[in-house]
Image (cartoon, rainbow, N blue to C red; front, side):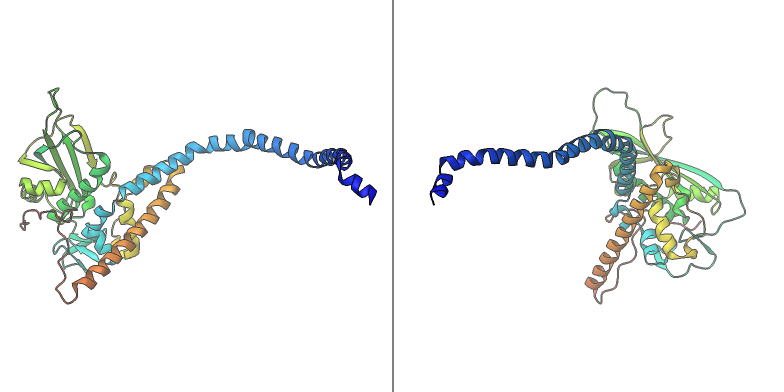
Length: 341
């Protein structure tokens, strides 16, 4: 018992100290290789392997992310939701420009192009027709931004094509401002909207006659463009408009979405090949953009399908509403009645 008492008091502490130090040294000797091997390895990998890899791949990843983000922004749900052509293709039907409704088959003497019932092609050369409207608009600061105008210009393509009974792929729309000569900011501006038609389905005379009867009042133009339009007259665009925005088949960001549902609609909906601006992108970005577009197009399809089911359920025994008009907005004012030409 004496030695035990002696070892449990100060001498025991004194005796344990060398053991503790030795044990610590032994533990340090045991763990030191791991510590020294781990730290240099971590430092070396981070400095020579990991960091250079991140730096070398970051530009490509950032570019791909920007391309996918641009595709997402372009696929505005509102623009596609209020597109009668897109809605009919989702139902695997044709959009009939003559009745402005979805149909299982196109009328006699009409033709199918991109899932649309339109005028049949003729043996005549393609007519190149251009019409410009001068608009007095009220806006503060920048009158529009490229991103927000995508939906507007796409809706204008749909409306003008529907008025002429031709595929919207044969219509191009340009919107620009007249350059201001005053240094003071003004609330009113002069804008020009130009519609260009390239088609062999309709003659130049017919095109001009129908375009003259298209949306000649300020209310219709306001609804079509989403701007406060005060006046509408025919005009000639300036040589160098300010803040011009243009949309044709080669620059319409909604083309991939239509191409996707056209494939689902079957061969009848693809009477003509689709020209996609994705082909103009760098090779490294095509895969990323295609993936983003496919996912978003699928999401749009599911969303619109669910909304359509909800609307049908709410409608009950009531007569369903006729298919939407010729503009991309829900509250759009219908353009002037077409005249057979």
